[in-house]
Image 1 (cartoon, rainbow, N blue to C red):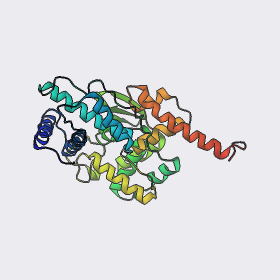
Image 2 (cartoon, one colour):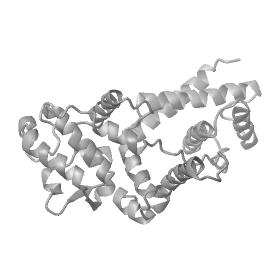
Image 3 (tube, helix red, strand yellow):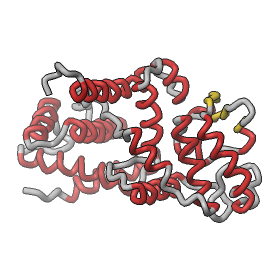
Image 4 (tube, rainbow, N blue to C red):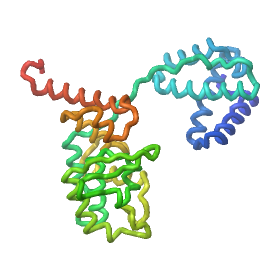
Length: 302
């Protein structure tokens, strides 16, 4: 049996309508939620039960069954999150007396290691823009700046000229929660930034005279546009690794740690409020050190 009754379908739709109203979820998220609860409802029907009669032990059996089917811990955790939200809503609406998902803990999934580039990859990526054009010179300055500072993409594209102090070699960053931090700029980043300000920025400016890196139309560049530019430059550079909008931010942190930087210094530079967020990079750096050891030590066994 893989079809829901009309009553259960309407029940799920009502919950999704509430999710949209309360959280403003996207169509993609709503469809993912719908799929998660439908799977549970169909599984319960096979157990001669339904969503409104579900017991805690049945939810645990459902989650165990998902795991046995080869569904990863992260996907199971996401589905459990939807289930918990659904049953909280049912309890609040008075449709059930007890929440069967209340005391079920989310599975421990660990945190994914960020994909990072080697220093050679970064050099190739930085050299990819055509600096004979205004856009290429802008892109080179942006890449140099983000690799030198570890800025988030949103922080980069919204930078204004007043946030840069070339004489002191500092950038004042407005991060998450409007928290400010000062991040130093290296000589290479300052060189390309000065050349960009002198040769390219005057040709790109629109109405926003303060914007440091305007788009082709002179407006604020979107995160998506910068991400698209990075993918284009990676193709030119021959970098075939899977990239993300934060690829150079990850490389900034990992390469600093590879060269002996203190973890708390990296935390401050990245603007992390919690050191545990930064610690994930130590795993990447340690793996790099192990690889170097096994490759170069005469008694490593390789």
